[in-house]
Length: 215
Ligand code: TYD
Image (cartoon, rainbow, N blue to C red; front, top):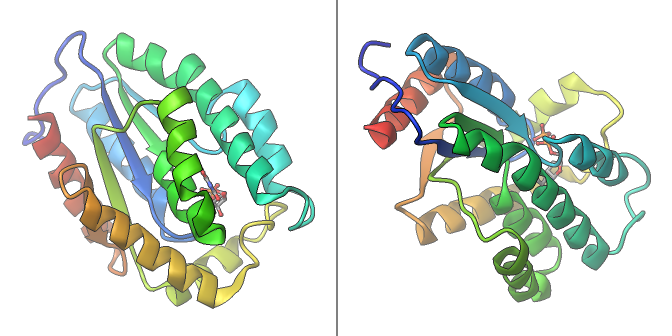
């Protein structure tokens, strides 16, 4: 932990973690938050869809119910509405007080998931983002993993939020390719980590990346 720079007053950092379902983002966020707190940072962990009371209500509309509950267009609007509330109520206030914000998913998930479901909506997704969000994380860590492995881990968790997780291996394989393409297009912001290793090794790599970003 001593390699990590100490917190600087008044300057927040916004980090997101991305990856296919089951890639281990929530575990890694927990480990990263613990390491950063031990180095003296104020850390806020949050997630999308969700992360504020209003956005968590929108999350329930998105992740529960029938697969065809919403059109692709409505789904993009709901994710963007949730993100706007999350940004206004949770992320920006935390950054303003100098906290480190770690978000499990952010706008890259909409680009990849909704962009994959409907490639013709990609330009509209970017327009909505520019109009209502207009903010990228300072650093995005993509946890890359064979979707078969990630899917097996996801299934083991179960639960009510099945809407997005029953779409099968081909979709997950395409998602992985979508995330890797996005990372290649934004090499400065998005850094890819091999997630198919013991979680301690993955955590050490992520901590090293974040340490460099904070330096
Ligand atoms: P999440 O809770 O991160 O699921 P998991 O822990 O399985 O990764 O996200 C719920 C689902 O919502 C997930 O399948 C990804 C999807 N999603 C989108 O399709 N678009 C988005 O913009 C976001 C944030 C999530």
